Length: 271
Image (cartoon, rainbow, N blue to C red; front, side, top):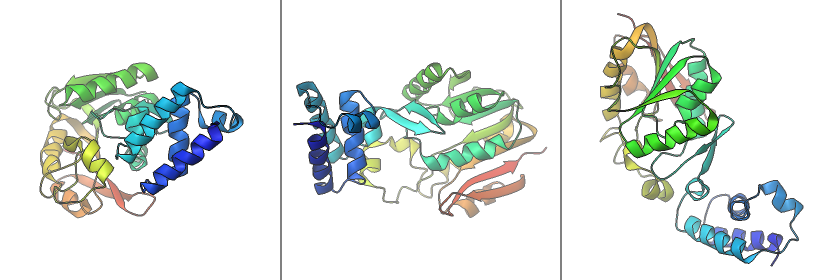
């Protein structure tokens, strides 16, 4: 069997299992099994599939048909033009979260705190895109291990702390606080691959999706310098509710993603 035939067979299996983007997924999984990129597959489509490649490819296809996200199979996800390592201990970075980065880059800051670091995608990106001193926190040590590995690999100077929200940091320590907190209401139905494989603690925000915001907002106020900014990702139905929690803050603004869905809310803290 050559690589072209292997791709076609993988695509057919994924289609039968109703996996989204079956052709692209087959290409990504075969490239991962071979240890090359997708361009190499096309340049060598007539090459015979080696036994070891077939063993890996078959296992990856089975995992994907069982609902395991492609990113957890390959261990990789691109975010803001960089490749991050991901494991089931962290949420897979989404393109929508890049709007948090874009909003943050519009606010000059000497010091930044990312609350709920996960894979480190936000903190590491801001460290590499700015000259700010960046710190990041997460309550889960396994997530911080993934984030720290990403920071080492990408040569990003981020200081990590294992703590609840910003408990490890002193008052008035930062010019900017950013976060992509858990915001999915517990009653919401998520796709199977998300529901069964991504960490629930990074997804669900209590009965109404606002549980973390109720604690995060006052905690951000504690560690922000006067005039500092809070920028957070929000759920598609929570802009009004999160905005209400920011009563007393200034210059509260909501930004939509490319689909026109409210995605980011920012606010300025003054004393």
